[in-house]
Length: 116
Image (cartoon, rainbow, N blue to C red; front, side, top):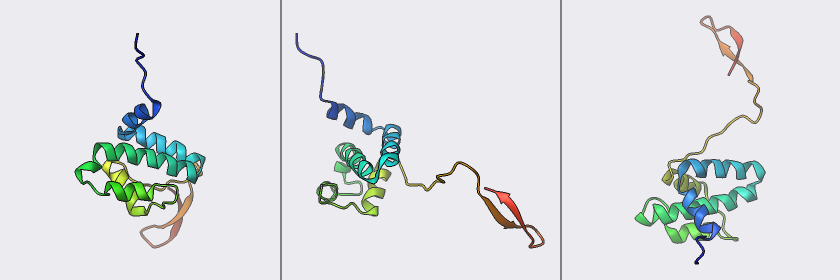
């Protein structure tokens, strides 16, 4: 009886074509290290390339492969284009979960403390 298994890499690329899965995958890798993020980004880009970029959306396949190679150095534009293709974007968040007090002016121009 033939086996009904398939390579994990094939399964992973199929799953990473889902924007929500890709988002969690990239965030988890980013928490580990920049190197892990770049490897994960390469896999997300590969999934994106096979699904949408072949249609000419944003980054060309050859450029993408070159920038994600061991010697490559993906640019911010490459990162943005790949993420946009999947409907994802980049955001900056606070590392500390506590709210940071900031000074804001009231109607009279007097500063008072407020939390963001």
